[in-house]
Length: 128
Image (cartoon, rainbow, N blue to C red):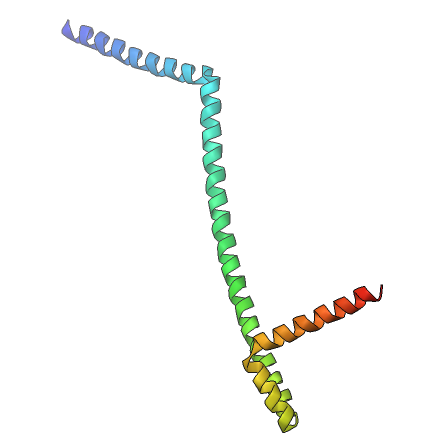
């Protein structure tokens, strides 16, 4: 007689457990605001992850591009320097000496250019 009673007790426990799971599942389905919040959180996390991945790719591309631009700029500066040296070498000696002095004092060249620009501007204003 104990066996049917124990069996019945086990059936009751199993039924309670299944009923609890069913009620929990139904409560979850009925909790629309909770599900919306959960979905919004999952979507936000997915977007955040995608944004981080994209930012990482963009950073790598920017670094690669910066490296290429730096190489090109270095090559261009070397070419310009070589061309400048070649041009100076082709000048008559007294002129080449003056150019070399000017190259050692770029501030003087800048000041002279600024003075020239101001003089041209003043003359053009006076003629109006």
